[in-house]
Picture (cartoon, rainbow, N blue to C red):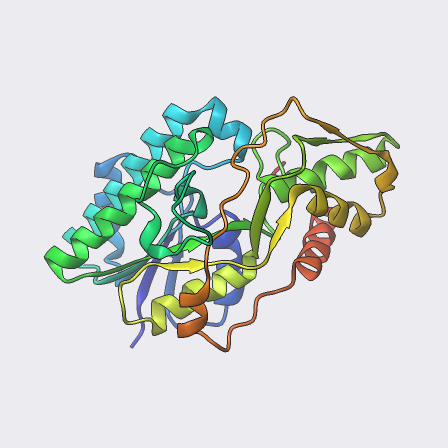
Length: 311
């Protein structure tokens, strides 16, 4: 039986990858952007749900950015995301949407956890890092509300917790991007201008990354196959920002001897390693793309789509 499926944030990186994957799917997909509905306005959201009457919802939309946007716009990021998340969840429940997938982030985890790697039970253990607390707390509240709706109304609103996402369709804006698209764009400019390159911070922080198409496939597996409501961490191997910078530099053919670092820039959280063992238990056959291959494909996509990509 065909399902009507709303995807918020449908024009973003993961929404665009999902659209590529389900192009021949028989369900009725509605990929929504901010032009279709103001998700911070409950009346607009209810009007949308009344019109479509969705069976499932994938909620990807968020006011999101990298470290420096989180520092600069922490209040607006918190307010926008709280409103969007609450409005979507309320509309889902009021329109009898029994199942949905809601995207969190590994940045919601404690800044100083009781142990590493952190698992799904630890997200509310203590406060997140101050550099992104607006975004982190808004996502923590969405996880709490998903649990509440599941318990009170017998819903299946499932939270996926990815680490840093990257890949085709990413936002390569020099001010507001996440680490990988930011590095790619800045290195591209350095190559074009035959200039030097400064790595922001000390290069010591450790991060985990997941390729955009991998996470999109996980969303679909969760929506159509997963019958529990427990949150799921999605993560791959860990790498330092310095080693990541050198990996991208080598991929793009930039001379690593010309790289210096600006230690005056914030490192953010030095470590936020999470545990993907629960995911491996439920999906033992799933294979993540290697970071090396994912970087190659992302760099290639960026160069091919330079004139039209978000930057």
